[in-house]
Length: 275
Image (cartoon, rainbow, N blue to C red; front, side, top):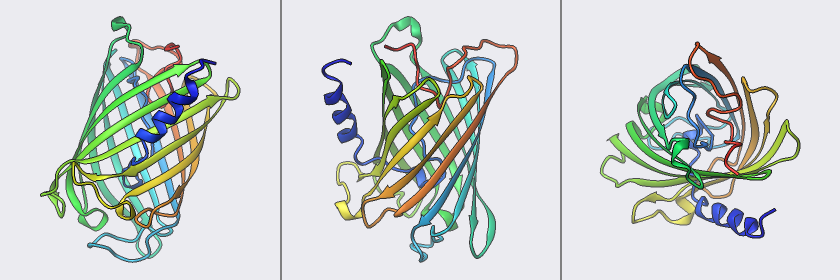
C-alpha cells in the first residue's frame, strides 16, 4: 500500500465534508467512467427516510417515512460521452405515490489516450421538479469528477456546483456541494466504503454549520457480474438541517446494443485500470 494513501484518504474526506445528498432522490458518488458506446445502463434508486423532517417547510413536503424511487436511464454515444435521464418519484405516508420531476444529464470523460494519472469527468444536469417537493422548480448542476484506483483502494471526489433557475433560491449564487467516496475491495465481489454528502450553501457566503446538510453513508458494493450493479448503505445526518437516518439501495443492469463494450466498466463501477 502506498505510504501516502492514508493522507490521500483524509484529504478526500475533508474536501468532501460538505457534500449534498442530491435531495435524497439519487444518493450516489460518481466515478469518472462513462457508459461505453452502444451500452444502456438502467438503474433504480430506492431511498427510504427512516427519520426525517416531519413538517412542511417553505412549501416542501415532509421527508419522514417517505420512499423516494428514481429511474435512471443512461446511454453511451461515444467512448467518452453519455447522456442520462431521470424520473423522480416519492411515496408519501399520507398521499401515496407522486411524480416529482425529470432531469437530463450529459457527461464527458477524459479519454484513456490522454494517459492522465487520475480519472477525470464533467457532468451537467438540468431539470424540473414539482414545487411540492423542492424549493426550486428548475435547477442546474455542474459536477466535476476526479477519481483514482490504488491497489484495492478507490477514491472519488465530486465537487458539485448547483444553481436555482426558478424558485425560492433563484437569486442566490451557486451552491457548493461536493461528494466523496473511499472504498476498499475486501474480496473480488465485495467492496466496503464510506460515502460523504453535504451542502455548504452559496459561494462565497456559505451557510452556518447548523444550516448545512452533512451525511455519512457506510456502504457496500457487490461486484457479482460486469452486467450488474448493486450498492446499498445507511446514512446518518449529523446536522440539524439533515435527515437523521436514510436507507439507500441501487440496482443497475447494463444492456449492450452491438456497440463497443468494455466488461467491468461503466457508471457505478470504479475504473479498475487506473492503478
